[in-house]
Length: 417
Image (cartoon, rainbow, N blue to C red):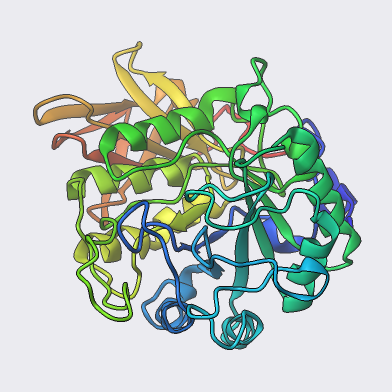
């Protein structure tokens, strides 16, 4: 059913009308998606893999910080062999069907999502049928299984914005609150400062192309999220960087049986680059869906994904998302988020080729006096500082801080009001 935005009172005044299909997207969702747990482009997923990943989310510290989504991408490879041409998951991958897996995920207090395509086939080589012409039966199938989230891609014949709208309408008609993510489509090409039809029919929309495990792709993601400005998304309506590569995607298939049951990582970025990825997704308040195998939490995954300050910055739904901002008379390129408690989160990535000092000047943050500064990655309180703060930053790493005025010296209005 369609829930109205009246549920958030004055929070959304001044922002786009939000498609609010329940409370699940008041904050940007935190979770895991399957696509890069194996080597990119060879995605399959399995009953036991999903169960053990859900177990890991509950026990590795992620669940304690609010991670709660288990999302299957284009990996469950259904056929239209059920009653009325309904979808049936691959019998070797999910021999008991999908509902027992979803029930297990729900039994842990987590939420579950599935993938489809707006066209006739899905994007992974056209292996699986899309939802074109089957909007109602697919939506009802998902609702009957207990699905909480549908990610819809844009592949196959007859892909169109009307297909997006038809699926949204069909999901709404089931009476079950189901989050809808638009994976790609013409809404991404809107040349004005909004996301076209996406906020009217979905809760989450991807900002640009697939995220691959390289630093240029990471920068493409965050640039796209910010491209329409930080007033173009917010509670119940989140622009989204594609799933995160923190820790490294899966390794090439080794012939094991069953495949991808051994959690492993073959990272293609440095730890500095993963730290920058997490910093910028956090400040931009993008949904954080981890695409790598969380059953094997590497040191950089533990350091970044389990950092409570990072999650707090990301989840502050009462504050406008962050935005790229020039500091220090234009000398520092930063990403800045004014938080709802009056403090300011600032990320300054070193995009150069050598270790360099990165300076954060307070004037452009609206702070005219002293401020307490916390270095997020070093987990150090730097004390009370006047005017600016700086430190040397390694190549492609990020200086991430929270700056809190010691008195009412901040002039920027941080909140949705």
